[in-house]
Length: 129
Image (cartoon, rainbow, N blue to C red; front, top):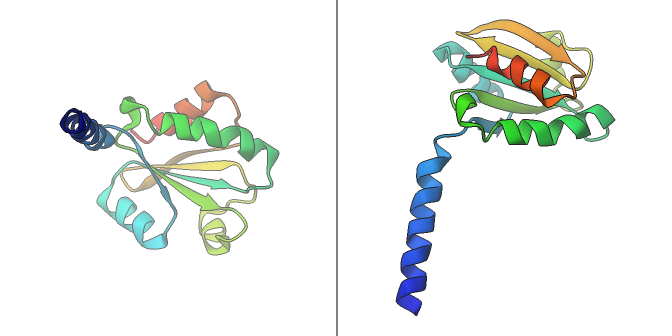
């Protein structure tokens, strides 16, 4: 019984680790991580959100779902706190929370503010590809 449970657990862990690379990378924003993604030309999205923002509260679960979509596996989604990332806001010229700034091959290609429908958010993120 314990051997069966151990084998089942091992297979589950192997499946989880194998599938983890198949999804988009949703990470907390760091300047170094962002700079690395941009300089290497990797597809990236900076999502500036605020915990108090009603629009952001609708967007966040959508972003979480989309980050598990295999189609978007190449995109790094940087989650940045609107209230604390003041220099980032200034650098990106973002004046409102609930903003997505999309980068492809190291250059900004689009941005979106206030979208709450999953198809529109998906479309914005896909522009990084």
